[in-house]
Length: 300
Image (cartoon, rainbow, N blue to C red; front, side, top):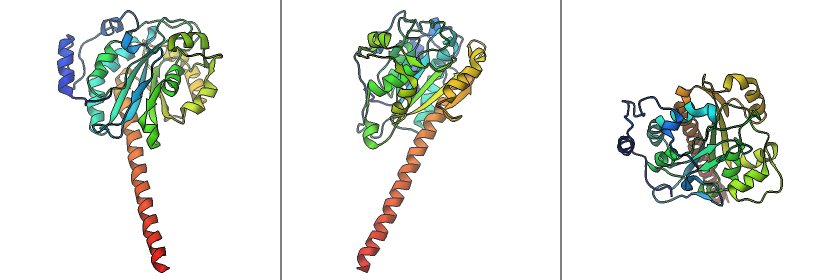
């Protein structure tokens, strides 16, 4: 998986086949409800997280892969955000490929492990039109429960224990971006997590214990969606408090529906730029070391 490159003409063809007109900026035009954009009524086999490992492998085509897990809250109040992500996918990918040639996306759907039938969905890592195809297969369950949080850290858990990334071999991190409108969950209940993933946990996965493990492998971000359709205003203070325990203002950001695409591009581009600068600095330091080492040898 992960071969190919994103081309806007491929997305245009795909959108026509799906009966969705495109706007001049490359986004899908028109108004859609979540159930119109996401027509699946159960978790698709391609997105079933049970007993799977999703891989992001370097190749001749993509020698320095940058894996990005984009996890969408698919509970009832987040329909507009999921639709906006789907409508602007071509804009996001077209802009990213101008700067980040080896980016690959895994699309996740996140619900509530305590209440929902399909609380975790996870695609393959892809770099071409298959991203759109798998995004369209998301089951927008529209569930959630009365516990005042969704299972956002399921994206962390899945990234840590159910992916295999070649970037780790190069000493680089992947990226996990979660989108939602409720506070950070304090734990993942182990029994439904076992059922969904096929794992054999004996205790709940506490966020405070999971965070230090996953941050070693991924740069973590959360986009809190501020929109009248969402529950953000009701949970504003609780979101800031719970996510703020772990995230600074760079990694926890509030965005409108219209700002989702720009923010995703900004996060991934900045991550790649930081890696590029680190590579240049490392090469420069090695060059200086070699220079002075040779001088030392000559002096002998």
